[in-house]
Image (cartoon, rainbow, N blue to C red; front, side, top):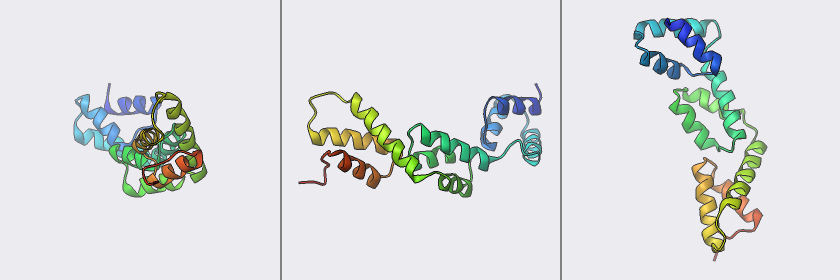
Length: 154
């Protein structure tokens, strides 16, 4: 399979960033110069667009319970330029993120073992949500609204 066919096949399965396609094609043993030429052509024809891919991925990851910092990290790992990461994050509705935070909080809370102290429960919830990329202030606010105690309370 030539570079163009391999790239189009990958894009037919899902959207990819330029870096992802460079890596996939490189693993197939395709020369770097040929990869660059094919990817430049795909960008010219609008078939490869990191900004659009970043926006779509950010929306999807937000819907699946990821916070802004986790999404930003994932996009950077896929080779998306900082300006495109910022634009993708700006396209997210803060209300959707708050809803995703509440949903993730409820899911995780149901999975916690019974018998934990309120503070231990809050710490586990906080840590879980922070790993998912939600802002610490938003997590604390959600915990307070839910009525859980946090470490900063006497």
